[in-house]
Structures are given as structure tokens and as C-alpha cells.
Length: 153
Length: 153
Length: 153
Image 1 (cartoon, one colour):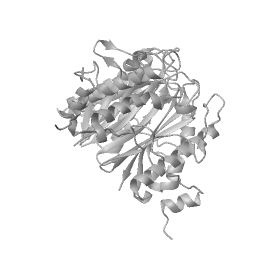
Image 2: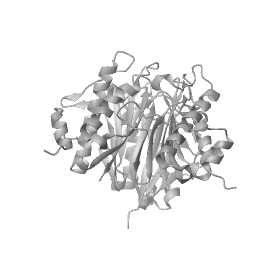
Image 3: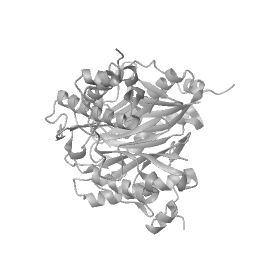
Image 4: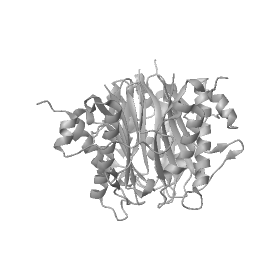
């Protein structure tokens, strides 16, 4: 049996959602040559926004990691929509924005929730460059937002 | 009459300024292949900085949108300088940084001020991917900073 | 004598460190075509993290500049590892994240510490586009994090 991104996601019990187009003058992704720029994803689940909170002010690193993982699921959902086939996709760069109290410092651990999923799903092609920073606030009070640049083979 | 980016800007009553080179070791834009990386733009108007304030701490969403729109005007001014012809330009990605109090959450509405102008000016080629986040502080206390990646045909 | 990036660094008294791979599912750099995406660098020195503090809350602009310069040294170290030869490298974009109190506004001056080193080391090829913003918090409480996109000739 050939292992594919879809088979790995199935083994993880992850069903990718169908991305909803933003209700504004921007789009979920833009392709330029073989690069794919994906809009910042928030922890949107099947029943609406999840993980609204601030790290270092009530939210734990575990909750932050789960939020980051859900952002990454949504990035993959957009990458699938854009590429038609996740086996053609490589993750080049993730930028992880963590909603942080001023003295929080565990941003790398939080964003590992997104990085780990990329490698679980895309294997070698999931190994990306990354930045993780702590922001003052995020849309609708979510704990994490992650944007990504991908490459389509 | 053929509609051009310049004719749309004229209809909107927008005159693009001549970008001033930064007084430092960076430049307003760098071109790599057909991609154009434009430095973060602040709400600089003809008479100096405008919109110095913080969202969720005195500044309204309307003021934030106006600030974001002015940042986008400045992005277009640099894109014109870099390309020579805005009809050859496509907006790939905007990143909007909003100067935010810790409990502010309407960053998408604020950055719509920039996104809307991109589509008003560039039409289909103005539809971009985007991230909007809330930062603790911005240069000179401005309310919004927006950076962009463009493509030149 | 031909001036090279290495000779300029030597004249500045800068010895590039050997980058340590991150202890996580991301990597120091990813190359896509001739673009090089380098992960966000913190002020890691030979003996561990330096410059842990917040601008506008105890840390001076001078300290911030030194932190930014050290981030830039680490970016060049990764660029050398990725390219094998820094004379083939051009800096396209830097994004500087400054750990800031809510009323700090001198982010451009702080990030000049990174921008200046790029031009001192890479000369014309060091002139980059740039954004500088103030974030609420950074990993391990460092004062500055800088990420970069480079081009390899």
C-alpha cells in the first residue's frame, strides 16, 4: 500500500474541512508560479471558532498546541483546495502568531502543535522554516493564528 | 474607454504619493524574479504621519480602517515606482499589523481598509491572501502597518 | 585583493556560528527555487541566549540594536550553511519583531541593528525590504526576533 498524505490524515483521524471563502476582499490562497500563499488560519472547527484565550493569562501550553494544530488542519484544507492533491504539496514556511500575555515565553512549544501536524501529514515535505512570536491580540480573541507558504510540485 | 488602475485611482480621488526612500539600510522594495517584496508601510500622508493611536484604547474601527487604507495607498505608490505600470501588478499577500489593546478582536475589519482598496484599484488582480494580527506597538505609535508581496507580469 | 562577504565579516570581527538544528519539526531553512526562507532567529550567542528583555520596559534602544545585530549574524550563519558561499546570497526581506511595551515606538531604530549588518556584510546585495513591528512577547523573553527571505544566485 502506498502511503499518501490522505492516508496519513485518515490514520490520524483528521477529516479536512471544506474551506469557506472569507467574507471580504481577500481570498484563502493565491498561487504565484509554484508558490502558494495561504491566508492566516484561526482555530475554526466544524461548529465554529475554538480556543479563544490568551497564553500566559489562563490558557495552557497544551491548549495553545491544540489551537495551533487546528490552524494547521485548516492550512492543509486550503492547500488541498488549491492543489487538488496534497501529495504534490511542500510546506516552505509557517508563521505562528500566539495571543500572549507580556511575560509569556513558550511560543515555540505552542507552535509545535502546527509544525508537528505538518510533518505527520506531509512527512519530509512537511519540514518547514518557521517563526513563532507573541502578539498582543488576535481576531475574535483566538489563541493562535498561523499563516503558510507552500510549494506545489 | 479602457479601464486602468490609474483611471480607477483617479475615480476614487486618490493621487499616489512619490515614495520617499527610507533613511536607513533598507529600501522600499526588492524584486526577485517576478515577485516584489514591499517594505511595511505606515499611514504616512502628504503632511506627515496620520492615525497615531491604538485600537481598543481610544481608536475606533473606522479610524483603523482609514489608517489601513492609507497604508495600502502607500503600498500601491511603491508598487508603481517598482513596476512602472500598475496594470502589470498583482497583489499576492498582505500582512496587516494592528496596534491593539490586549482585548481587541476586530483586526479583520480594520485590515479590510487595505484589502478593499487593493480590489478597488487592481480589480481581480487585487484579490490577495492575507493575515491580520494585533501587535503590542508600532513605529511612532501608528495604528496600522501593512506589508505586501506583489507579482509583476 | 578581492573583497568577499567573508573578508568583510572578518574585518568586522564577526565569526559566524555553526547553526544548531531546531529541536522540533521545523528546520533552519527551506529552499524553493532560488529563494531561501530562513526561520526566525533569536539573539543566541556562543554561550546561550543573550538580550532577554523588553523595549520600553527596561531595555534601551542600544541594547535592542545589539540584539537585532546578533539575530542578523545568526541569519547569515544559516544563509552560509544553505548556500555554501555567502557571495552568492542576496537579502530580499527582513521582518523584525521587537518585544515591546505598549507605548514603545522606536522599532525602526532597533531593527536597524540587523539592517546595518546586512549591508556591512553583503554590501549592495544586503539592501532589503523590511517590516519592523512591536510584539507583546517573544520566545524565552528575548528582545528581538528577525526572520529573512534570501535569494541564491
